[in-house]
Image 1 (cartoon, each protein chain N blue to C red):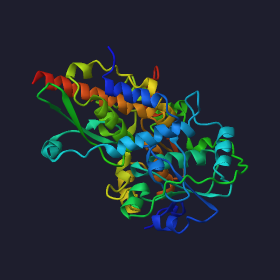
Image 2: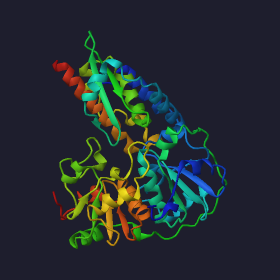
Image 3: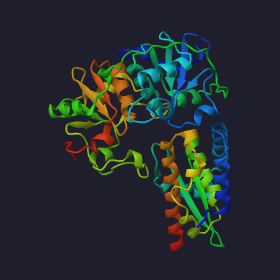
Image 4: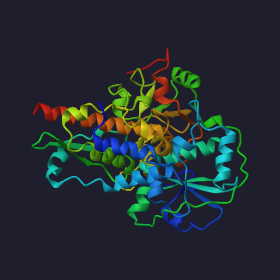
Length: 279
Length: 143
């Protein structure tokens, strides 16, 4: 059984065959920012989650205008096919893809397996940073159908609609409040949003080569926890990055029509006055 | 109390670097982090990594005859930033006495302005590794 929307995924071979394709832009988005300067796929540009995609002042993403400026500088047009890849099983690649979708970019793909698989296959990495002729990119208004905000998460929780907590089991139970020494990612309360089920994000990928699991495995994983295609699903984690991978899996690999990523996630909910919490 | 001289030197070096030089120098440190000596491999298998975000970091400390501490790390090459930060700490603190290590302020790296190169969030790892080096130093003092 193939994925619901296989066009959102390409393999490393496809990327290797499209390095010189002017209609394709390859974007590396990593958790570790030194990986790109140490070596990347030829022609790939770097989009750093923290320095490029976050709003410089408030807790939000770049504005529509800032997003347009970033894309224009990277030589991306509205028709460019963008292939994202990265480290850590593509979690930041999925985060970047999610944000590109938020601002309406249509042709986006994930390179299955990310950096891990590319390196395992001993494919070449280069150090030269490419530069592309500036374009005039025009973004769409933010697509709020893929992003959940706290008020709707509360309504969602009260209505006992499907919520997926993709953090580690100890974060879900509240045993671990936050990653030690990660002061900005802390929460004053531990536990999970009432009604959420625990499906750690990493269960959707194969440990060996970071590729996604098969449709059958994914169906068993999510439907087994009652996260089904006919529901309105919201996924969350600590800052919204791991849950964007789960969002990608549910939306494009399993084809669930209504899936949102709650990027406020536990760093918002666990600090929110009066928010209900289950332990 | 001032920083141990070697660590102070690294802090001063970084303070005067451009963004590009910082990235290059960090990569240099990452690439020069020595592999974990064989004699630790057995203990390594029994240990829990420092709970870094997604990066399994293993840290060992050894007390020298003169009371100085030498640190050894095992960090996967997929995490060069953490490798680089750990190597800076090892280079700056290896051979120091536990008291000197404990006296290093948690925010000693602020003048390095590393956030120009790797964004503030990633510096949490710096604090985390330093905190564990201090804990290791305390444990060695008690031995």
